[in-house]
Structures are given as structure tokens and as C-alpha cells.
Length: 487
Ligand code: P53
Image 1 (tube, rainbow, N blue to C red):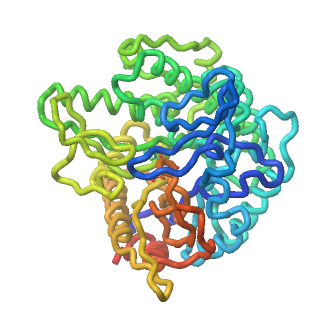
Image 2: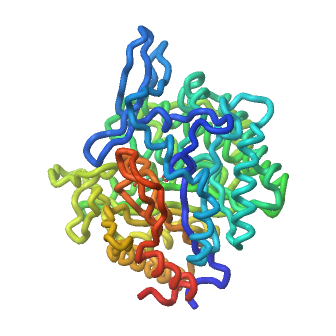
Image 3: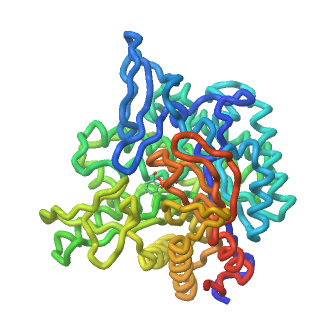
């Protein structure tokens, strides 16, 4: 057997992409609730009212709320998060389907604004706590271990309006209060936690030539999140020593675009800035040796106290988890063959093929990533997101023949198997969007990842009916055979 006996096979979701029920039972808003749908070529837009009372819309990437403006929902716009796939009201039916596939683990996120609607209440919202308790109980009843992301792109909107996007120190205590509430409330029910989803996105999605102020904010933002994460880890361990708490990194495998030594150095700095920086702080409890060089490149000088540094040391994570979808080739040379698509940058890699959204399909990159990171940290690892976003065709008889998705997952599971044989302590794999949900980057439904199809379309229409794709039966076999039967 390649995979360990209690290997956590499963799938992953995030609150704001699947729950819907955006204003139910006292929930507060998050930025996604004022963000429209987009496509591979047109960005999602944030809607707001400016200081003069005029309706405004702006692309979400790099968005900053102008002075005097406030976020707003417009009646005639479509916001995919408002209904999602309505997991809020379908969770029992959905968990039954996960159980049918034999899931051992289900990754989901708690929506902060269901628990603390504005982030600043003294007491948590009971209805929010009850919802997640019921979900966790349902999972337990079905023998499925929950893996809970405490934050998955959904800071309460009221906090963003007041303090900006994590560039204020007060966020640390607000987040730790929220995390403590979860640890206390679900003690004995939830054991596996992740503090911040894809924490490194703050830095690795920035253009190289962004202005210094933007880098200053990004590094500051990250520092407050590092401290918040470390303090939450410490609290989580104190509240229940059984808790296993991980970091979660957006894992992209970088390749040098040519063998020019300049490209070797450049690709190495992409690893440092985009990937190692966050993992190093969260796993080792201190800033890495190359930090000053990264900061100096952009004249950055973050607010960091002695207490912060102590907190980082006391709150190192128990496991290294990451998402993996693609690799990227990067070069210092003039090269116009840039891969177009969403979220992707870098030059075309002639040895790889690309998804319809421009993401490079590269299972070997996953093996490489696992081996590199395990050697760096020697912590148990989990692949907590992986999958293929693709357009699915629903046949008249209700079947969905998604052989492309099966191929993608098979090759990535094989790659994990090789890394395990080479000594990596891999303890779980939760496939992204195991049930179709709203795409984070484009807001589309048609970028589907699921083994379970949901009848819900980009314009908001659909019955919300759930249907089993071919990959559903395939993944069931994979789990039954503990990753041996991949055909
Ligand atoms: P979508 C950027 C690059 C890689 C993964 O992505 C990313 C992002 C940010 O969107 O996000 C993660 O839905 C994220 C999930 C997301 C998933 O990957 O854009 O943790 O919330 O849905 C897939 O296709």
C-alpha cells in the first residue's frame, strides 16, 4: 500500500462559494456578497456607492474602497454568493452523497460573519454556531472527519469598511477572538483546522512591478495575519491539545523559463516570495534569512513588535497543507508567449497543456512540490485542494461523462503516490469543489470541479438538483482501494 492506512480521502469547499443563505439567521456580509460574477476574460466587479451617493463598480483585483464610499448590493446585479449552491439548506443531502463516495474527510470553511456578523460583537451569533454544529454532527454521524478553514477569503465586510483589508493591527485580536470561539464551541467535534486559506495570495498574485506602497501594504497585511494565525494556533493547542492546526499555502510550482542562470535566480526568488516566505514563518516561527532582501526590493518596512516575534515562535503549525492546480514557467527574457487565462502568469511551457482557464496541467509539479516542502519542514502534509475546473455536459439521461476530470485526478494521485514512496509523510487529499460550486476567481458556475453536478447556471437559474458524474463512481473506487485502483 502506498498511502497510509488512515489516509484522509475527501473533498473541499468554502463557505462563500457554496453556502448561499447570505443574509439568513443574522449573518453579516463579506466582500464576495458585493462582488458580481465574471468570466475568464472579464473580471468580477465590486459594487459600492461613492461619497456623492452614485452607484459604482470596479474590478475586484487590487480594489480599495475610496474615501467616504460604502459597499452596496444593487437589486439589478447578480451576486453568485447569495445563493451559491445553497449548501446551507442542502447539507444533509450533500453529506449523504459524500458518504456514498466513502469520504473520510470533508474540508469546509466557517463564515466568520455568521459567527460575528460585524466582527466586533461581544457575543457570537447563536444561529451561526448552531448551523456549523449541525453540519459537524452530520459529518461525524457519517464517519467523516471535518477539516475546518477558519478564514477562506471572507473577512466581515463591516471590518473591511472600518479598518481596510488587514492593514490594521486590531484585526489580530478580532480574529483570535473568533478562532477561540470556534475552538471552545467545537471542542471534541473538530480536530483538524487551517488558520488562513492560501495566505500567500496576498503577495504571490501581485504584479512584479506593483508600486512600493502596494508591497508595503501587502507585507504588513501578511504580518498581521501571521501573528493572528500564530496566536490562534497557541490558543487552539491550549483549549484542546488534540487539535492539529495547519497553514494553507497556494502551491504553485515555479520553473525557470530557460537555463540562463539569471532565470534560475529569478525563479528561485519567485519560490521565496510566492511560496517559501509564508510557509517558513508559519512552520518555523520566524522570518526567513532572505526576508530583508525581499522587503528592500520594494522599500518595505512593516510594523513588527518584539511581542509579535515571540508570538510567531509560540504558534508554529502542526502540518503543512496546500492547494495545487498548476505550475508556472517564469523568465527574465523578453517572451511574448504569455499564457492568457485567468490568474495565470508566466510564459507558455511547451511540455505542458493548459485548461480552458489557462492553468498548466502538471502532475509532476505536484510530486516535486511535495518532496521539496517535506524536506524543508518535515511536517505531515495534506493536499487540501486539487482538481480540474472544466465545462461539463449534462446528458439527457442525467449522466455526466467527465473523463477529463478523472484523468486529471488520476495523474495527480499517481504523483502523490510517488512522493509517498519517496518518503513524504502525506496524510490526506481533499479534492477541490467535490460538489460543484461558485468559482472564486471568476464567479462562474460553469467552471466546475465536482464529482457531484449541481443544476445551477451562471445567470442564477437552475433547480439546484444534485447529480452523480462519472468521476463520482471513479473516486468511490479510488477511496475503497485506498488509492490502488485508479482505472
Ligand atoms: P477557482 C488563485 C490561484 C490558485 C488558486 O479556483 C486559487 C486562486 C484564487 O482564486 O484559489 C483557490 O475557483 C481557492 C478556492 C478556489 C480554488 O482555488 O478560481 O482556495 O477558493 O475556488 C479554485 O477556479
